[in-house]
Amino acid sequence: MMLALFGTVVIAGIVGYASERSGFTQNGVVQSIVICVGGAFLFFFLRLMFGIGFNAPGWNAVASSIGALIIVPFHWRR
Image (cartoon, rainbow, N blue to C red; front, side, top):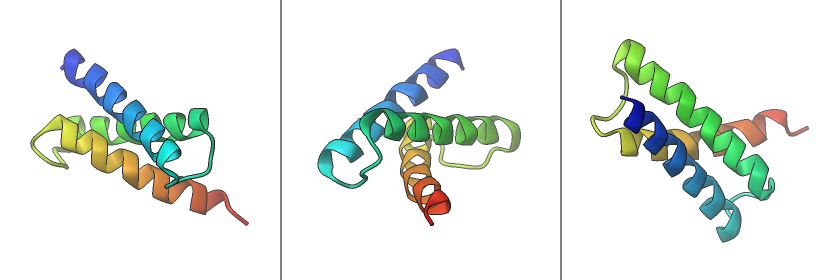
C-alpha cells in the first residue's frame, strides 16, 4: 500500500509538470504539481475507504490529477 501511495505522488507530479509544460494549464509548475498531488491524495484515500475508482492505482492517479487541474483553477477564478 505504501508503494502505491508513493507511485500515486510520482504520477501526479509528472502529470502536473507535463500539463504545465504542454500549455494545458497556466498556473505555474509548482502550483500545478501541488494541485495534482492534492487531488491524487484525495482520490487515493477515497479508493481506500470506499473502493471508488479504477482497479489500477496508476489510472486513479492520472484521472484524479487531471480532474483536480480542471476543477481547482476554475473554482478560484473570478
